[in-house]
Length: 480
Picture 1 (cartoon, rainbow, N blue to C red):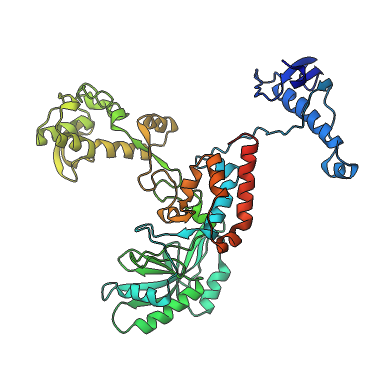
Picture 2: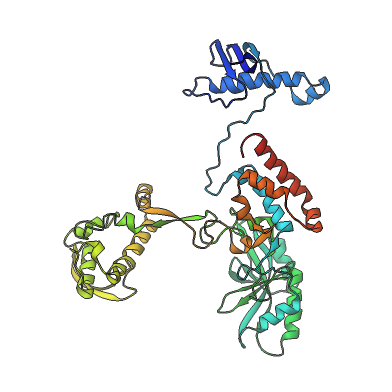
């Protein structure tokens, strides 16, 4: 090999290195391996990188060097053929299961800001672009509720913020309002309301209480305007006995009647309840019990131990409580515990797996406290195992149950980890999840060719500059 393309190290004694001589090829991917403490980091960082950085700094002016600090010369006799060097230090990753390359490099933070500022919201139901909603449109939508429906118009003045919010409650009281809803509980403002300082709270002022009927449009319009003024364009209609309806002066679908919350950077965070999928809580998958793991050999009968999950091995023992239930079910529904599990017809299989659906059977059981006859509705093997797992306190027992579970993508978000409202916001016809799934090179090309309006370019100019710089850095250091 050409000696000009080598880094020649002679007499390296840094830390635990002992007079090491080594030639390392230039422009190659070189890996240093060895036992812990053998000197890998001392050679790579404390010797080679330290000398490369020291030489680079010596090339700078004395004025520039005073701001960078003085680097010590490593304990080495000589290093030849050393080019300018950069170092990518080892960094322990976050154990949070929600963390990704995007969140660790902070690129995702800028994408959340980009989508919040220039993203185009769409209806999560029909896909139509959502635009601002006027006061008259809100009143018309409320008036579509059945006549005599009781409603409360709520102004959400605090949404997911920590603090005691004493000033907020005092201001509401001085403004003449009587009631507030704090974290789902209604209070009179004359009461003493104490909130935990370090917990996130939601506070809604009850602006008006109405019954839907003809002739209330004027009063409702005035109240809606008051709500929107208090809550910066947001309103919640609390339908007594029904689901609450969210309204926003910013975003609503005229076809489906769906209103979505104001778009904020946290709307695209899977670490925040305002953006995370409500089913999987932002992880993207769920641990579900698998029938193939709970009953691994379906050629066996229940009597032969087909059910392998903890707590159900006792079903093979005569006189056990679990066996008494299954025997009573077998007698009532006409099946035997000696039959191979795979030979059960579909209705019997579903009966054992999902339960009787509330239908009770007469179970004769003799325990330590005597005999008895009990009417029991069997909850099903699946629900029983879920309950045992949920209620168990021992960590080792939980881990044992988890061996009978498999990871499945979340049914609600399809593994994309965000609320459907957040996934319906696009930039360049792609939502933020589609952006995150692109390889770095493809993502850089997409960003370079992103077609935005002049207004979007002005708003997102600095954010786009930061994203492109970070993507370029990942490509330049070979991490694409």
